[in-house]
Image (cartoon, rainbow, N blue to C red; front, side, top):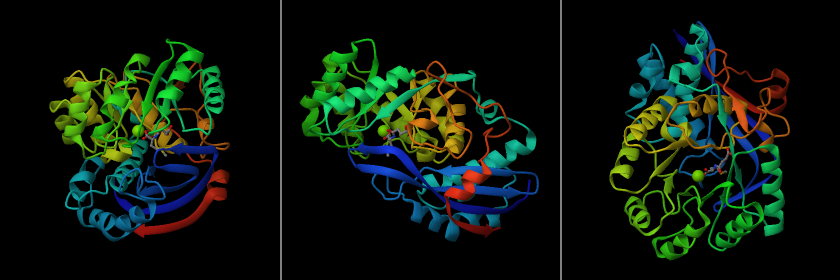
Length: 368
Ligand SMILES: CSCC[C@@H](NC(=O)CCC(=O)O)C(=O)O
Ligand SMILES: [Mg+2]
């Protein structure tokens, strides 16, 4: 397979409602899509970086820059024969895992489409549909929160994840438990909003029988999470801290987490995501697929990954309608709390041309 070039395409999609986390509020997505053009097929990679470096150090403008100046020229020099050669070619450049993930995914998608192989099969999927959780933002009131959760449970979501931050934690969790009972699968995500001094506060969540507490402390505070894991009964799950299979191995070895949220965009791509899955399975650590408000392109690939055997907890693989009135692809629709794994070659979905044209804000061609 010969790579002709990479198209950088920016698209802007409004969210159906503001999505508030401990690091800010989002009202739309400015998404960078990569289209890999080869002599045999084309492939898509969706970059998960946000507008600003608040979830991680990466952000969309920086991703475009590092692709333009370093990563795509490196591919020109190495002429990778297939997707497995992309990460080694990009290894000299430190970090920028979201940029690398999008590039590797676009090339992997092109390769698999040319070969007629679905991504799910390539990764080792064992299910043809996956159970879906939903992420619920911080709200202005508990009443609004309970109405929102009620709506999602009515839609069939099998797990509720509440965003929390200091001042919005015990009360909303208690309100959800009191309204919907103890059987609802419930977890929380702090996005690093707490400190080691909050151990007792986080331990006060134990009586609510949560599935997990996601990333309570700073992404670099592995020791702090290990100490917290010894103080809090609820399993600690890491997200921002797990940037690679090595980081996952170290966190597990140090007792910093008992569950891992795998996001392919955060760790450099689907091949590294599979390595993390395999490593966690070897240690008996459950994993689930996190989300970055992906369009249907990234959502399709995430659903394929979530079908691997070690993904034993519902992921943030929600229906398209959780975030978008109109998705870039045919919408992902919840069916009895599950999404079907795409069966077509590669990621198995394509952008709808008229939607793509309407939401595109810029196009840049990077020849190899
Ligand atoms: C803008 S928040 C993105 C990161 C966040 N993602 C979610 O909460 C799920 C988003 C989704 O459903 O795609 C996380 O830290 O897990
Ligand atoms: Mg998270």
